[in-house]
Image (tube, rainbow, N blue to C red; front, top):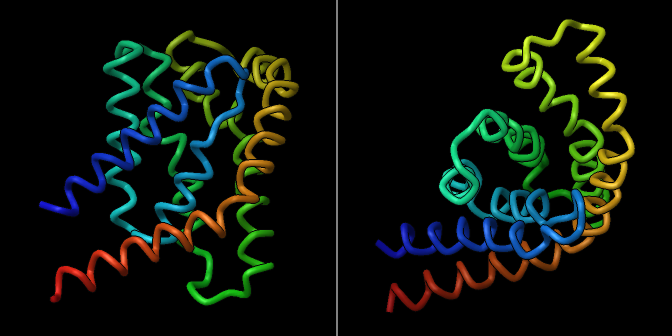
Length: 171
């Protein structure tokens, strides 16, 4: 029951953080939180991630724009899962910044297959759509990279909270 409550809170935090950052185009903390959740909860991080996806659909309406949300956050989760559990702090921070930056730059490209499918775009039109979005992807990448500098302190904090809760439950 406790885990379900924690994951509900984390998914809601993910959703609310994105909603609160709507004023800043393509700047948000989604990649950061996915990295932190994955670092602490590993495969179970998919629960708050997909709660975020569900809440986003409920809030914004389940339409064609939402379909890529079903897969677009998975690369951040997968790349974080591939990080060594015990890597040096400097390496962890560097890799998190890289993951955030690469995902931000790749966002339009990751989104493109759904756009092409739903709007019947041919290959040249899809490439043009991706290229037109590159400035926004660069902004997204810069925001992710800045946010991901917080991955280490937030994951350490969440792990301490998780460990403290487990210790208190054993008493």
